[in-house]
Amino acid sequence: ANGFEVKNIITWNKTNAMPNVTRRVLTHSTEFVIWAVKGKGWIFNYAILKELNPERKQDGTSKQMKDVWNLPLVQGKERIRDKKTNKAVHPTQKPEEMLKRIILGFSNERDITLDPFAGSGTTPFVAKKYNRQYVGIEKEEKYVKIIQKRLGSRQLKGFISKDF
Image (cartoon, rainbow, N blue to C red; front, side):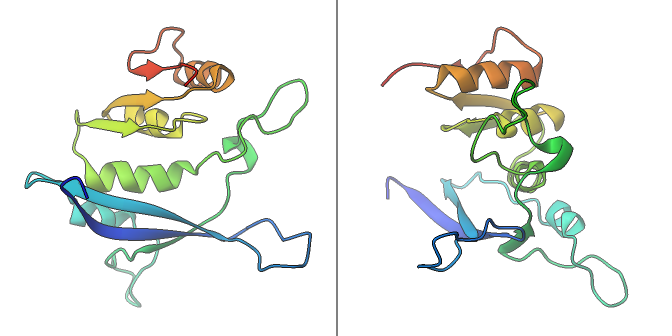
C-alpha cells in the first residue's frame, strides 16, 4: 500500500517472555518488525547482517541472517529504571541489539532513521551510536524527558511531543 513493498516480516522471539498469569491463553512471546521499502534506492547490508548473526556454521564461520530473531526482553543494566522506585520507566523498551541489527542492516552512515513511536528512545540512541541521523515522534512528555536524558540533550532536534 502507498507504494511500499514489504521485503520481510521479522519475528522477535522473546526468549524470556513473561508467563501468562491467567492460565487461560498461550503465553505471548513474539512481536513483529515489518521491513518495507519504497522505490529503488533501498539499503540491505547483507554482509553486516551476516556478521551480526549470533548463529554460526559448524566450522564457526558467519551464517546468513534469518527472519526470526531470538532476543530477550530488556533487563539488567540496559533496562531504564526510575531511580526512586526502581521500576521500569517504559513498559515496552526494545533491546538495543534488535535496533542495532535494523539500523546497521537497513541503513548507511548519515542516513535518517524514523521512529514514529519513540517510547524510551532506543532507536535514536542506537542510531546516534552508529552515526545515523534520527527523527523520533513521541506524544508522551514523560517519555520525551527519558529520551532527552538518554541522548544527553535537553533540546532534541527531530522530536515531537504533542497531544493528539
